[in-house]
Length: 73
Image 1 (cartoon, one colour):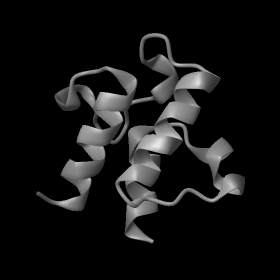
Image 2: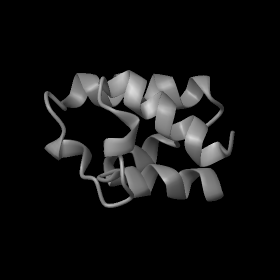
Image 3: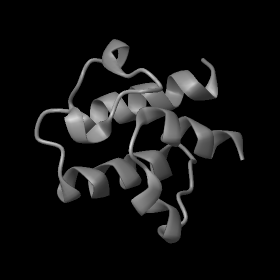
Image 4: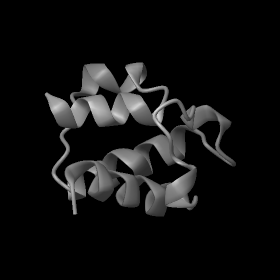
């Protein structure tokens, strides 16, 4: 499984959405019930799969593509 697929599954599980619904341009804020608590849940899920999100970058995450970019650096 590629890094992108692992991240997609982790995000889908954390946010309780189908993995196939997560496209690079999917706005996290358009997902059902997405709020600051969901963002924290997402950060923990990403950390669990080895994606470290610097605290100063959290506010810049708006889309699933933004998360994928973090895996490329």
